[in-house]
Every structure is written in structure tokens, then in C-alpha cells.
Image (cartoon, rainbow, N blue to C red; front, side):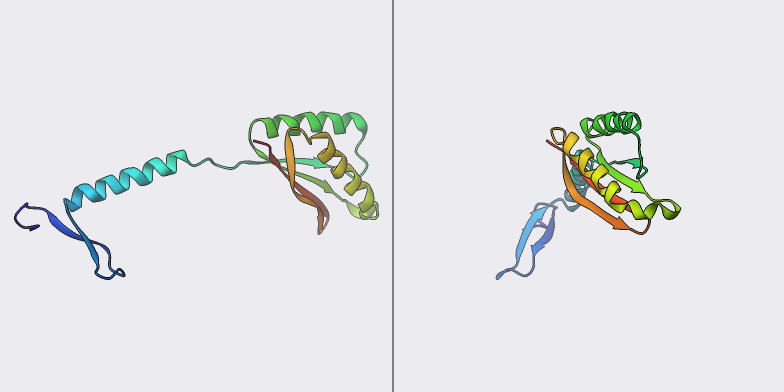
Length: 133
């Protein structure tokens, strides 16, 4: 039948019983498939991660300044990676760093949600936040 219509016989699913095949123009099928893949790729959203860095003894003014930046990042739809960097002996202030990150999470509660609670990795305590829909 495919030869009569000058088309191709394309095997769609070989695992089915009986196997599924279609009579169609194979080149056009490939073209449509590539076009559909391109549309799917265009619809994907690229996830950007913005970082905000604090010290364990960050002052209130610096905190507010960085909080405003973090809020704008979340409103723009980016994920936020907030971290406290411990230099030298400041590692003894781990609890202050965690309190700082939890305070940030509480202040940004209406624009974002916490994906990962504060966790110490080496000399950094990291917390991830994602924007609310």
C-alpha cells in the first residue's frame, strides 16, 4: 500500500502485538518531529541561581541591603542561594550564621519558599530558596 501512494512504511511501536506501523512521508515526519522538539526547547524555562553572601557577624544595615537584593532576585523568578562564609576562627559562630539564614528565610517568606534548610558544607553554611508561583 505504501508503494501505491509513494509513501514510506514507518514502524511506530515494535513491542506491541501486532507491531504498529504507519504509512506516511518519512522526511516530513522527521521535519515535524524536529520542529516539535524545537518548540518544546523554546518553552523550557532556564533556571538561574543568584547568590547572596553573608558573614557570621553581618551588621543590620548590610543585612537589609542584601535582603532587598535577594527579594528582587526572587521576584524576578531566579532561585536564591544564600550562604554564610566562615573565615578563619569565625567557624565558632556557626549558630549565629544559622540564625542569620533563618531570619532571612522568615523575612522573605512571602516571596519565596525554602528548598533546603541551612546546612554546613566546609566553611560555608548554605540555604536554597525558590520563588513562589
